[in-house]
Amino acid sequence: MTQINSGPDSSGPDIVISPVSTKADTEAFVDFGFRINASDPNYVPNLRSEELSKFTPGKNPFFEHARCQLFLARRGPDKNGEVVGRISAHIDELALAQSAEQGMGPGTGNWGALETLDEAVAKLLIARAEIWLREQGMTRVLAPMNLSVWEEPGLLVKGHDHPPMYMMGHQSARYQPWIEGEGYGLVKRLYTYDIDITVEYPPLIQRIIASGEKNERIRIRKVDLGNFERDVQILCTILNDAWSDNWGFVPFTPSEIAYTAKSLKPLVKPDLIRFAEYDGEPVAFMMTLPDFNQVLAHANRPSGKPSLLGWLKIALWLRKPRPADMRVPLMGVLKRLQSSRMASQLAFMMIEYIRRDSIAHFGGRRGEIGWILEDNQGMVAIADAINSKINKQYNIYEKAL
Image 1 (tube, one colour):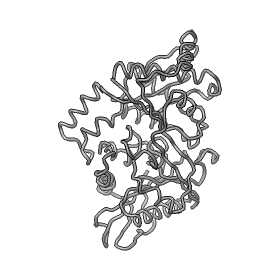
Image 2 (spheres, rainbow, N blue to C red):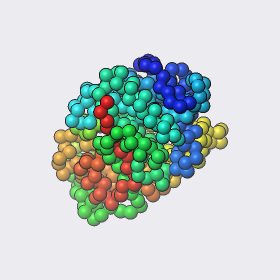
Image 3 (cartoon, one colour):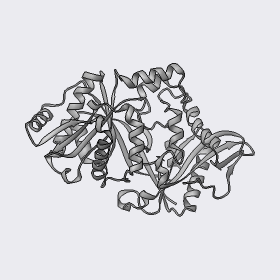
């Protein structure tokens, strides 16, 4: 995918909005995100190298099936002024092929990665993203998406008072009224759920788990690092099937599977990823990751470039992340089992086994599940049953173009 420079630059009083077209522009785009959030005590900077990879065609396989244009807002009479804002506009070809009833579908584009301190600049950036999407033939926008639904979807509207866990977005509260003021209506809420994992689950859940342990047809196993690629393929096969009817679903491609597996492998611990097999067939999984943000918050710099000592702290933590809180980013049961009692039984068994190992081997005390769609009744019921509570809310908005 090549970045597209279409249409004239947008401008306002002393503001020039221009498309990102060079490596230096991309670096300015990424660095502005770090700089504008540096004063937020609950912001945790990602590694700069990961952010650059995310927005670079040829590195992030999202660009293999997406058209994307990044924009920078600069203050001054030309394109060499101070950067005061940024936004991405993008169209996922796989999303266009989905059913409109599931949220995406034909004519639907996206924007994301909005950052600025100035409401007037935010309006100009959103307007410029909308112009680009119309030029590409889009008739509707879902936003914010940074970049895909599998990365950092939605705008944080509740939970600004504590840091996000790894791979979850953290945006300023100023953006909600600015976006809604541009005619965007709420289409979906995404929640994360917080839980004290040191507390045992209610007796009913314990009985369900004990019953499953007596069933010889059920086997709960750990991820096998010796056959890591095989297990990654199994996980993604279940994931694409389990999530295929969910709102906003876009299939994970083989390239994205390989890219994600490579980037997350340092965080993969066998005790924290479980597969459920029934009669020898993998039918469910639960992925749990130690919260990498715990070490990034202390070892990383606001610029996303750790010092030598910072890199050493990161390396030591990755080798033995303890104490470490836990995040469950992905969980799934094959679609044909989702309406059965077994689906929740397998989920509770995997959750309990991982809970025990999180405490015993990693000193974990807190867990976070999500994101979860507000109307995903099965997952919401599981979250409620283990006494977890909503701790963050992300809004996704829509607007006709």
